[in-house]
Length: 373
Ligand code: NAD
Image: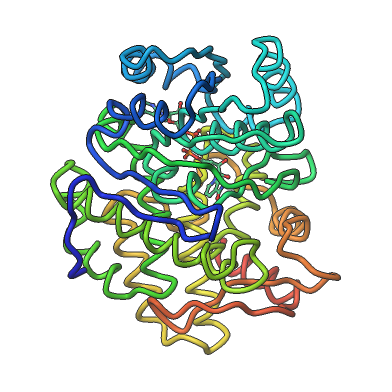
């Protein structure tokens, strides 16, 4: 973590003619109106948000757009994962079409990962593809979901099974917006941030262990950590935009995590980041069971997540958890499955994740049973 934060702090996603900038700054929303005016002269804007972000942050965005005399309309959805549905997608698209947004107009995804994934997907199919801008307001969205172009919704068959790769034209990650985010949601986002350390950047994970308090309290370490995470994501997206290879490492903990989310009904019982926290701990423990890692790192990851208040055990998931066989059913539905064999992101230790194909379902079932006892 030797890099310096300069202000304004721009991270570029380098994808040739589809490259775009992430502006990580305390006033990224306040300056957005001027940025949009110069990037998209004459365009109208369709803001998609959710009820919480509308209440807490929309006035700031409106002020920024009003200052530049930009024309916009707003569509607000119910907050939460259950809005990543076909029903809400159709409602959002119909509302935006009713507002007469044209092909050269711009959709603004203003909210957490749910709004970003949903509005991004809507823009990928509306009028055969419209441009969109991400304004992530949750920590999770700032460090992960707003960057990289994965958009989509959930199906009753599983999470994120309907979607498209559709890159935004610009990302405005406003650090001040995080002040109205609940501590539980912040923690969930922290899990996705720590993920970059666990994948291939042990130094970042160790730095997080030292600096997590300042990150939670909103000190200078927060901006540094978010920008570092965005740079990490930028590297993966640049080298493997459509996830044919290394980008899959970003799924560390996700095959387990998605199964827990499905088994808890995509509800507030278990947030996405919380599910991923348990999933990442299990990925370390399973790797230890296979003799790939020495076990000390699994304990270290567990301890750090416990320290910040994240769940680490199956028993930390509130309510009665589905049987291991049911969890296996969800795991088999995950999109990281190929012809019955399971693909998992495993690890040789902190910062040493790798992709393993051909994992036997029975071996995972046995491991899940062990984790319950
Ligand atoms: P979310 O969008 O549900 O936001 C979390 C909660 O925080 C919501 O209730 C929201 O209303 C509220 N909120 C957001 N910003 C706020 C603010 N500034 N002030 C007050 N409240 C605020 O969930 P999330 O954790 O942001 O994102 C999770 C989603 O992201 C999942 O659906 C996951 O699958 C997806 N995801 C996508 C990618 C990707 O690459 N596309 C990567 C990781 C996760």
